[in-house]
Length: 110
Length: 114
Image (cartoon, rainbow over all chains, first blue to last red; front, top):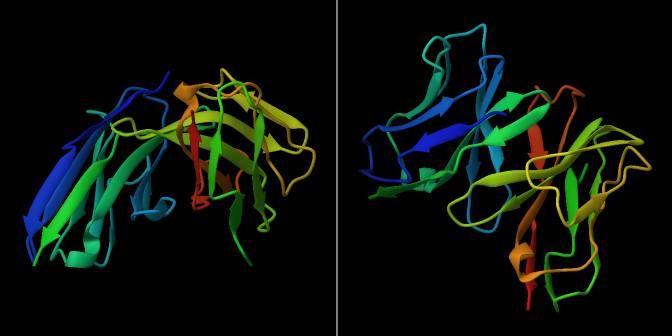
């Protein structure tokens, strides 16, 4: 079955700096890769997703890149703000099941 | 439009007790799923359903049962609670039966088994 690995587990950055979170997956048939943000006491919320026919997608300060050959995808957050502090999860779909990475706790210091 | 609603928000059980965690969505979504979230392990899929009357197992199904009698509701049953089932449980729904569309999550049920 699918296995999704996510790094780093924690990430601390200064406000205004960029943050990058990386994930790898094992199922070459996976074709949908969402990223979720989870704030304390809340359920995860989708922030951006990418499909296998696209190499990069951008939404304001957030971008995701996908390398299907290497089976890895990354989340890039530019000009980080304190409100970006949260836990971020990557995921990949495999035969109707969404498999999550183990999460990255991002802290943005003012 | 309430989205995905989970009840209760908190629950404490004794070992061996049974319980049903409720999940309802008002978005007419075909796909619904249950995850558990444990520290350092991300979200792990317990069971999922691609439509009313259809359910299937996820990564960690043991000790849990589900049913899907209506499109709106997808309850999760713990038959005989064990301390290893202490966790935060999330229900999610998605428009697509193939689950290649964004999932909408509830705010979770925090369950402690003593």
